[in-house]
View 1 (cartoon, one colour):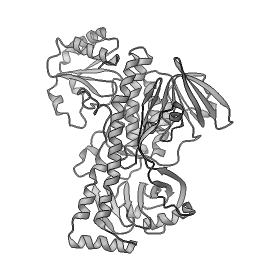
View 2 (spheres, rainbow, N blue to C red; view 1 turned 135 degrees about the vertical axis):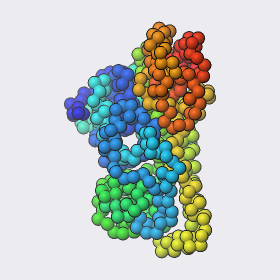
View 3 (cartoon, rainbow, N blue to C red; view 1 turned 90 degrees about the horizontal axis):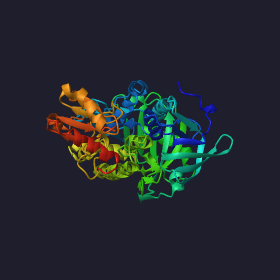
Length: 520
């Protein structure tokens, strides 16, 4: 059960201060707690979010959440809506332009750890309760960072409380900045963003309405609305209860007042609707100039902000937290040198750059559908145009829609996979050992290797039988020929060999030592 945060006290000192209590910050806290590291999360919002925001968690991030023991709880909490179709239509109740069957040729979405469609307002309380259940962590809501300044072996962070306006000084050994795309803490550190933006402005309308009548025949998370009078996307989180309508800002006077009417135009029917909230967001394609500044690190949307086309923002942030947490923990515990932390940026930033490009490319590629439809000025003309295309046998619209498939099935570029060095080849499995693990095909040698390898290293290295190594993506076919595979705490395969391990134990130990000194 979560502790009552009303009684939480702002500490004078914490080992790691995490600014931002969204999914990335909360997962960072739980991962650090798993290593026994004292940490404090501060979040400027006084309550958990009511807006759905991000909603699809990819396979590798789901493995991380499963490693925190949250898989069953997440599966129980997520809405039952199948992730089957991505739909394009004149209106939700109107003419269908086409759809992508996500499950055709994409079995990886439903096997192993599947993609999970859970809105952030359902996921975040689960992550919050996990974080505050740890004795090494606390989460403070309604707390703002007003300044952050490194001083010797600590960072001085000034914090103000929303509840009474009181000012507090917190000293921390390490600072993790996870307070989102508009990060104030990143600004305090003087780290600029680089890239494209700002672009278009959009409304995110969180509504309560029953739209199941039009969702059930073609169930899926997204409905791209082509109606020129109400363009945008309906995200059907729980079709009988609530969803989100994303629509561009037109710059009209009192535009927000007309969003319910626009939503009804997008549906194509007038349905009883309650607006829970309206938020604006601005499209960017930007990366922080630096991921590390001294004792401070950027993770999640504080380090990168790109369009939601592809849904890669949340997932990239969770992977960054997983990459940074073990390195920070090993340095704090004296098991690794500070130089290990210098590998965080070169492993993670290229992945964020690649995912930014992917998101922008996805956004641009959507124009192909508009080009295939041609010009029209009214919903009636649009529907007539769709019928004409279908009757004529013209495949251009179907081809344009099918060409969007990777937009909705790509897992994104993973940290480490694009860094110079072939040893960052792929992810293997979730971190069952919570540390380094050497998988060997000689089960009889496991016990002896455990003692030998740990005596050669500064750290404990688990040695496990090879059958426990699972390639969930079934892409690493070369694993079947390997006699030994070394995995890092974050699941990345660091080393492997198709030779008998005898005579190579010292090599493995040296590889680990180099890694912990940041020289690999």
